[in-house]
Amino acid sequence: MKRLWALLKKRPVALCSVAVLVFLYLQMILAEFIAPYRPDTVFPSLSYCPPSLVWYSVENGFCPQVQKRALLDEVTYRYARIRGEHYKVKFFVQGEEYRLFGIFKTNIHLFGTEIPYTDVESQTGKVQSYPVFLFGADSLGRDIFSRIVYGSRVSLTIGIIAIFISLSIAVILGGISGYYGGTIDWIIMRISEFFILIPGLYLILFIRSLMSRTMDSGQSYMIITIILAFVSWPGSARLIRGMVHSMKREDFVVNAQAEGVPAIVILLKHIIPQLSSILIISITLGIPGYILGETTLSYLGLGIVDPAVSWGSLISRDATTVSNITKYTWVIIPGIYLLVTTLAFNFIGEFLRDYFDPFHKSRN
Image 1 (cartoon, rainbow, N blue to C red):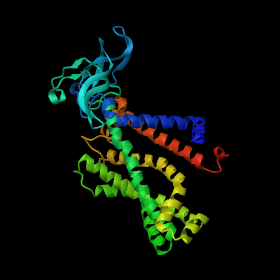
Image 2 (image 1 turned 90 degrees about the vertical axis):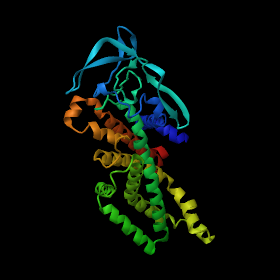
Image 3 (image 1 turned 120 degrees about the vertical axis):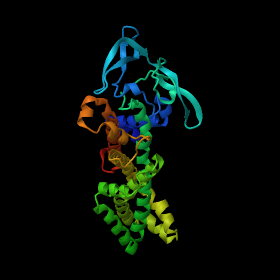
Image 4 (image 1 turned 180 degrees about the horizontal axis):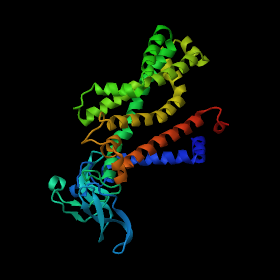
């Protein structure tokens, strides 16, 4: 661990990537507390409202505050700032009620305003506080920041669950194939080659299109995770098979066989632990692929759909045309989150690959 930390401090990009992922996953865990509103909370008169946070006004001086805006054109959604209408942003304010970690009932949010938003069309009929749009609002007047925070629960977990399923299949089939060889090896390798020959994206789209489009968000999440894992195991299985095949001739494996240790114990206790570095690298480099796979399906309307939310569904809803992107530039922020997360995982994967490489200078 000391050597790992020493190398990490010499790689600022990898260190920043670790910090970014820690921040994103903490944000995901505390989504109800950090997000000022639920993902389906609507402010009808503020559709496509631009980011409203400012840091200075004559009335309040230097502090985080919201400047009220008036809608000038309901067709182009052009807004004008109202001079003298600034509301202070406060921390640990009361808002919509929720259960933290699904257990503790509370209504305290990280930030917000205490000025009532008196739109009579407001959802649920309850008076909301005037909204703080860090990243603007979407076409229905929903806070994009809150939707990004809640959407991370799908986008950041689907990669971890899918890679766990995929690697489990790869370790089992690749380990059996490499250890036993013969007919079993031939059958498993031919099956994996069949999946490898078909372009992964087309296979994912084909399998997903066969499923019902009327599934709820939980069913869609489960089906997408299984599809991504099912399509992606062959490459890892072939890699593990080759390493197990070469490792089963090592002295410690031969000695275990001579002592009558069952094959499954030899695989799980003696061989697979030797592959831990490869598995760790496969996890960090594989997760971004699954996140992008979910994004692609959601963008094409085959993934997560309203009322559920993911980063892919956010992109598919508002960032679909050049006109929308140029008029309302803040709608591409979910795509920036996606890009940053993907790069962070890749930088960490490259760092771990160098760390576990016996010929890298960090090992000398």
